[in-house]
Length: 102
Image (cartoon, rainbow, N blue to C red; front, side, top):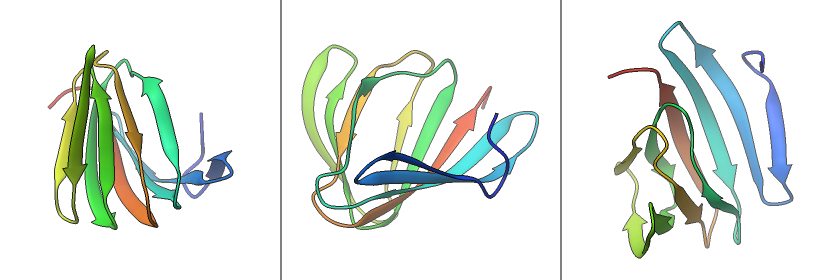
């Protein structure tokens, strides 16, 4: 398990920092530079992504190709085991919350 304050470089263009954790939630700040992406993946919890800077492009949700743009202030919610892929075409920061329950 990551410690609060720990930064992980997921790739050359994506990193995330754990900023808090309690029994129901882990919160991260994810930074993506131009070309940053998360390929199709899922989690065993609810994921809430709030755009802080830049914008995030959702390219797939579940088994459906999509092209949805999330701007500053927008939130994307992915349910337990809901697969999704995302990318950024400019510097983007996202508050990512993983929740056991809402």
